[in-house]
Amino acid sequence: MITLPFKKLRSWGRYAVILTMTAFVVSLSGKSSTLILRRADFSENRMVRGGMVSELKGNVHFVYDDTEIKADFTRWRRHRGTAYFSGDVKVVRPHQTLTCRSMTYNRNGKKVVVTGDVDFMDTERNMRITGQRGTYYLEREDIVIDLNPRLERYDTTAGDTLVIVSKRMSYNDSLRMATATDDVVMTKGVMQATCSLAYFHPEDYRARLRSDPRIYYDEHRLTGDSIDLFFVDELLRGIAAMRNAEGIYHENGEEDTIVTTIAGDSLYMGITESGKLDTIWVHRDAQSVYYAKRTPTKKNIAKGKRMVLSFNEEGEARRLRIEGNAESIYYVDDESGGEAGRNTASGDIIHVTFRDGRAVYLRLSGGVRGLYTSSD
Image (tube, rainbow, N blue to C red; front, side, top):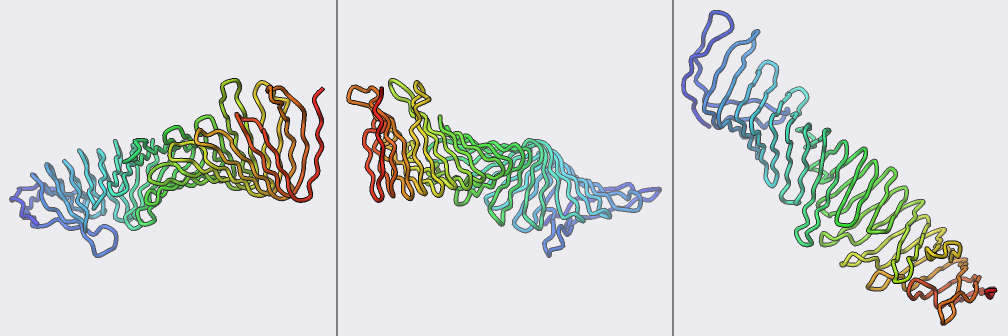
C-alpha cells in the first residue's frame, strides 16, 4: 500500500477538494477480495454529475487476491462501479498472463471486457489464446474471445504446435477446457481437422470434435458424427470416430495407388510415434472396400461385425481380420501380377494378408462357403 502526494483537484461546480490517498479499494465480484492500488505516478479525483471519478496515470499497479493488474491509465467511476484501463494493460496470475490494449470492468456484470491485441498465456499448460476482443467472467473464471480467436498449444518435444481457430472461443480455468465454435479448424503437423464445435483439454491433451467433424491426415480422411483425438507425449497417437464412421486411406506404391475405404458404426485409428498408421479397429456393420486407381471397377470388399486392419512400419496394409458373419470379395493375382480371378467367400472369421497393397492370402474359419471365378 502506498501514499500518493497531495493533489489540488477541481470538483463539479465551484468547489475543490484536496485528497490524500493511502489506498484505492473497490470490491470486484461480491467476494471478500478487493482491488488495491499499489502505485501510480499521478492521481486526479473530481466530482462528475454527483459521482466521484478518479484518474490514474503512469505505471498504474493494482493487486487483487493473487492477481496483479498494470496499465498506463485508469479511469474509475466509483458510483457506477466501472473502471477503464488502457495502454499496455497486463493482468498476471500464477502461470497465467493476459495482455491487451484496453480493459473495462463492470461491477454489476462481474466481468471485464478486453479489446485490442488480446493475448492470454498459460505457461503451465503451454497454451496461448489470442484475439481482438473478449470478455472475462470473474466468478466463473471463464474467458471468451469473440473476434479472431486463435489457440496455440506448444509442443515442447516434437516441434509441432497444435493450432485451433474459430469464430468464437472460450477457456474455463476451473474446468481446464477450451471450447471453439463455428468454422473450427484444428491443425497439428500433417493433420487438419474441421468441425462446428470442438472441446480441447490442454491438461491431458485431448480434443473432442462435434458437429460435422472431418479429419485430414496426410492423404487420409476420416469422418463421423463425433471424433476424439488422443495425444501421448504431445504426439497424435489415436483418432476415434463414433457413429457413421468412415475412413479413406491412400497407399502410394511404385506402380499404382491403392485406395481403401473403411466404414462402420465406430472406428479407431492407432498411429505410431513416426506418424504412420498402425492399426484400424471397426465395430458394428464394418465394411472395407479397396481398389487400385488404375482398375477402379475391380473393388475388393469385406464385411462383418468387427474388423481389424494392421499396417507395417511403412504404413502399408499388412493384415485384415473380419469377425462375425464375415463376407469378402477379392480379386486374386497370379505370380506374374496379372488378374487370375475373383474369390467370393464367407465364414465366421476371415483373415487376409496383403503385399504391395494387394491381397495375397485368404483364410476362412467357421461355416466356410466360397466361390472362385477364374478370369476370361
